[in-house]
Length: 499
Image (tube, rainbow, N blue to C red; front, top):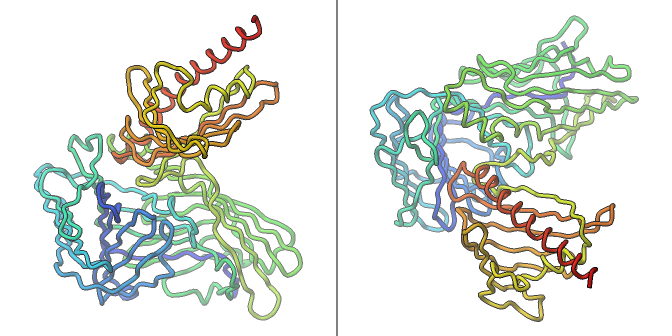
């Protein structure tokens, strides 16, 4: 039938993949090896090097046909070059990963990856929805990377990574998986990538009809032309999006309609789900697609169930996605223009990216009195605060370094910025297993005449997977500090009043 299809569904095949985090390289924070073997994308390897500026460099063998614009990762693609892989072995067997891959990056440094697992224990692979799209700044699609045959690389055996001849440390998990200590290196022997999109953000594209969809894509229609489901197949994998009720034929739509949808991948139903709404005005139809339900795995072994429950972004990140588009029906060729939008969502935090949290507290003290206490980076005579280095007197003391004692623990902090009477930002130098820890405290007047304090923190855990535990400890520590500060400010205020 000639029903116009406003949304698209595509399966992008991968044969296998493996990725890991690097702890101590100044340029790269991780790498991913992907293998291709299909008519569309060719045959061979691609190596993705994740840079610390959140861009990704893509190196591909000559036989691999990839399109730069289709890589929506992190802060975008950096280098995108063809490269010879000097050595080549990429096997994912029942006994684990066996890898020997090397390339020369654009800086002339040799990047070498060698893995030989030697743990004879039986493996029990899982299925995982990878939170790849949780770290994309400007998504061009809702990208679901569904990993069958998923497992971690065990720390029994050899795992060597070298950059420019220098050995690099591979990050490890802080807790055992299936009673085995593992690297923060994970692989999939049966990955499938599903792309749910809906048009270009600025350039309208012609809408295909149900009987003229690209190869591998299909639409199931009702008798009156409504879309009951979209389908896509490639390399033995299948995805399907049922609509309940069916998405109306937009040419026959009068007014508005709404309903629900879900994405099924292979044998797993409802990997993610959401709602849709369409509303017509003349020859234009507004289309809205929201993800309202994240991934809820079933039947996972206990270690993975705990992992995906504690690291809740595995389950919640899809809910930050929504699509807004406009279909124009006038003329012979209807067109669609739309874009995916990432909502701010506190649970969308990916391993390897800064973790954030904030504390807000109302205090029954005057804002000026609270700031007088917090804004004095030297501690104002507090015996638990020692100023080690003075800062720039012409810039409100910025650059000062202090040592702070809390419950017997010592923290060293540097003043990064100060706005007199309002707020300050500091960097934690020592005292916690984190990197790039910055805290910002601001003081405002509350509606009830007291003070409103907001303390924002961002950091990167040195041990991947421990961000939520570090946040719990940091919250407890800050709560104790603020309890004491509030009590001292209140006592000083009462003493001043009595005087």
